[in-house]
Image 1 (cartoon, helix red, strand yellow):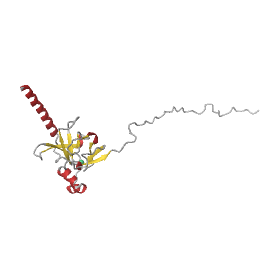
Image 2: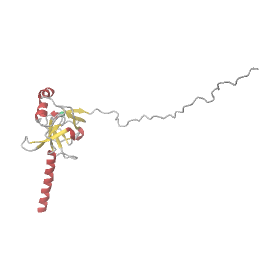
Image 3: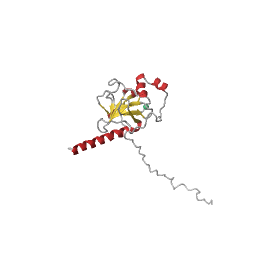
Image 4: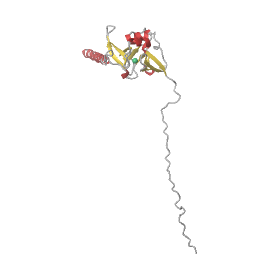
Length: 202
Ligand SMILES: [Zn+2]
């Protein structure tokens, strides 16, 4: 029995350290320099009241209220503030939370995380790397293959629907240059010889 208790303690430790590693990827997004920087007035002008509250003031939209929690179309979710592609419909899953949920971002480098104690306990906040927009939080209770659940606000995203492709540009047709063995035909060597034998007049 003692041994089993130890086993559970170990599992707990491992799980705990995993949670910490997700959280310690934090790079203090508030103080980080961003590629896209706008004034508060500019953000207010560009965004709707809700979009502003969520992305610039880290508010959370009400569950089941947003545009995308139930969106099943194929496409890309961009940052509403700076148009950076952040998530794909390929990693979206049904979380039952009422917020659009993904198990992975399109590119890890396009997001930043930090620890958020707003609710009295540690959560990992997710922001847009490019402009610092608050997107939502990431939790360790997601599905395979990552085990992560990126719980996002619809208000911070803009969905770009896939355009059905008619012809994939996968194969490039190599224009085969038929190498012509150009035989440079030199003019006939039997050129009329100049200088006809002089006829000696009699
Ligand atoms: Zn952004």
